[in-house]
Image 1 (cartoon, rainbow, N blue to C red):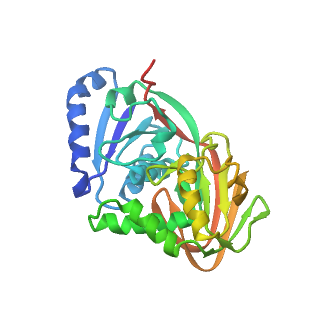
Image 2: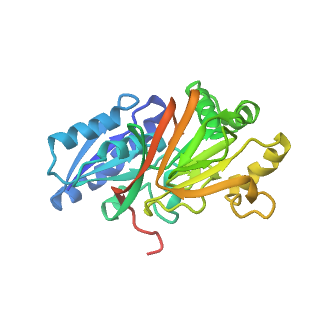
Image 3: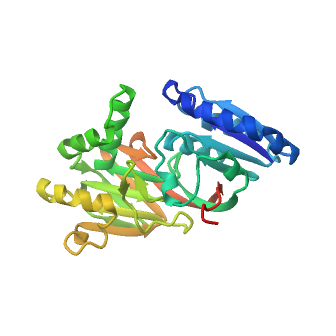
Length: 305
């Protein structure tokens, strides 16, 4: 087995590289004595991890490789996108000093230890395909996309509390997106929406439990749609939505349309933004489907075992 560490090498992520290299210095001899090998790769920019994973997989189709994403949701997405379609290729996740919504699906597991990854277990999970892109965690349209777009812009400027500032902008400008959603042939809501989430995982934005019923290995996308509502009502719903209580709340659950679906088509007359694992994909048509059991994920062992 080759363990291929894909390390986010942005200037503000230097601590990730230092932590990975420190752990590998302690474990390299032990790993190599087991007959395994280690490769490290430092990313150079957006999309670089996906390109490197695909290139290596193309050149070594029969080699068993575990690509380890060392970074946040963006790095995880790029590595997952890179191994789609390749057999004998798996992925794992190491998270240091970064937010990663995807791993919140797996409480009680240590995603900061190379040893725990090496000694972990492989499982099969789904991934969402959006046109020619992929999302391992979730997609969002409307309010969620405005929040993510704003947060990304502010983070690039070195600002703090970017998601909370994004929420403020979303409340002011992201509550009336015009788009048509069709899920497994069913028209969902009307042409205006406040938000629509399409989830494989459960969390987004660092703290929002947007898809509390989602299972990332059931071959289904959890769709949650809410039409535009009064600002005061929305302000009351936000903390409920954050805690993941929105689907069962005695007063507000009827505001949401919830479906579990396999295929979704999103169309809009004008360009809209779709948030894809925290990144923004603009367009007027999105063909979305679930790819069941497409990804082999190496999980660290449970801490109480």
